[in-house]
Amino acid sequence: MVNADYTIFVDQTHWYLMEISSQQNLSPQTQENITEVVWLNVQQSREALTQSYRSLNDSLSRYITE
Image 1 (cartoon, rainbow, N blue to C red):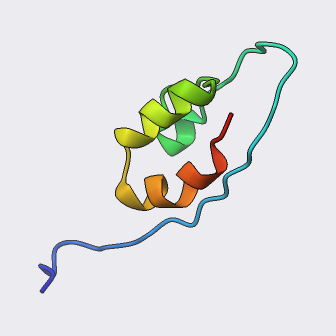
Image 2: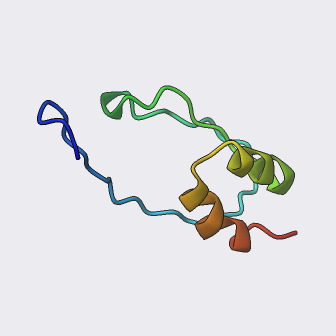
């Protein structure tokens, strides 16, 4: 049961596998409370997924290959 003082919601997100030719600067979307954005290589992506929600790990790990 959920306490009436709380609202539970799930945001829909879209993920894209990208390759880049430069390390261009990224800007976080601060109005969405995103404070940091970074480019990750394959190994860094795998590591980040181990620190993430299981549903993200399950969904994205199959696409992160060398």
